[in-house]
Amino acid sequence: MKISAFSMRALCALLNMAVIAVLATALSAYATAQLVSVQFISGRSGRVVKKGVRVWVHFDNGKGREILDLRTDSQGVIQFDAGGATTFQVSAVGFVPCGEQPIGVPARNYSVEDVLKHGLLTKNECGTLHSEPLRGRLSYFVRPATWWELFKN
Image (cartoon, rainbow, N blue to C red):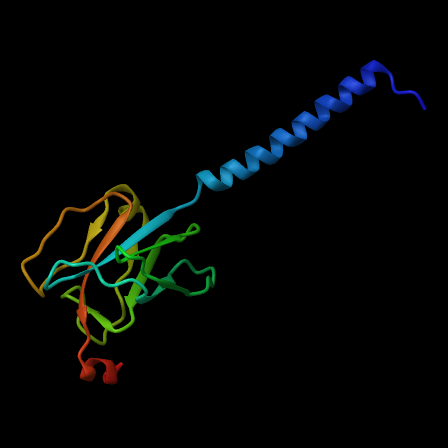
């Protein structure tokens, strides 16, 4: 079977369009990623929490998304893709917030849009350290939980 030059050009054009469609789909998925960073900082000393602290991230988007179980890096930071969620909650195992919410009440919801556009800071009633918000990051002031606080939870 002989393929004409016209058929060969049409086949190449169709193949090029398919490749472009696949690349466009991959790039659009990358462009819509909502990469959020949360840095855990000691409200007393201003140092970042150590590497490997376990952090749970919860989403209130009604899609039944699973809870993320992450670990901090050497800068006390976790990163995750919000995946279209509008709000999220975080809780660091073994730590309590420095005044963001009373112990034992449900965790506060943080707006993904606010974090990505402006950055957010939590309250710091553990010390005098204050910081400036960084776009794309929630700076979360914590202190180690007491044994009694760990027992109650």
